[in-house]
Image 1 (tube, rainbow over the protein chains, first blue to last red):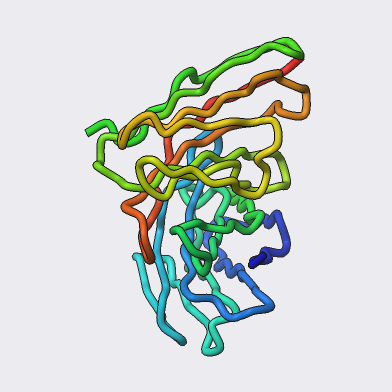
Image 2: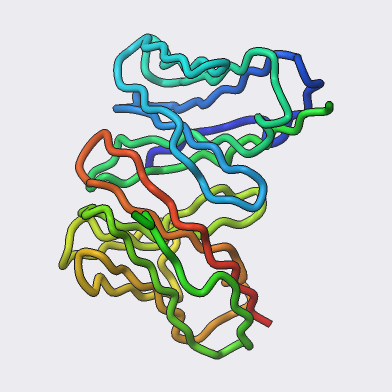
Length: 111
Length: 113
């Protein structure tokens, strides 16, 4: 089945640094969703990207869908301790509204 | 609106015991899902219900059964729990169809001894 890859699984940054992570697929994606899970919490929807090359911004977070719709990126400008958590991308290409999640990247921020 | 609720929050079982995890949503969503989350494995789909009256297997269905009791409720049953089923279980719901975000419940932390 469709798989989305997120590598690495962990990243540590100094507060104030920028952070970028990627979500990759070997096949074309219909659309991609991003979720954030705070430590001890549940996943919360952040954004959905549908169009090739689409860019969406939420305050310090910038999401992009690749031109070939085989990858997506999440960029955080000037990280803060509130950005700590695990970020998942999820592929919505399958039928019946199923999502296939990547394994996520856990971000830690040193104050 | 409470969103998606799950009970219980925590549970400890002995190997071979059975239990049912309950999930309910008050958003009039058509689709509901059960995931398990294990360290380093992300979220894996156990079962889902695209609409009331239908259920389908996900990626890791073995050892589980589900019931879509009505549009609001979707339960997950472990008939004979095994230590490999120790995990955090999340229920989620969505409007269904394409391009719809999923809303997650707070999760159930299950330990099987």
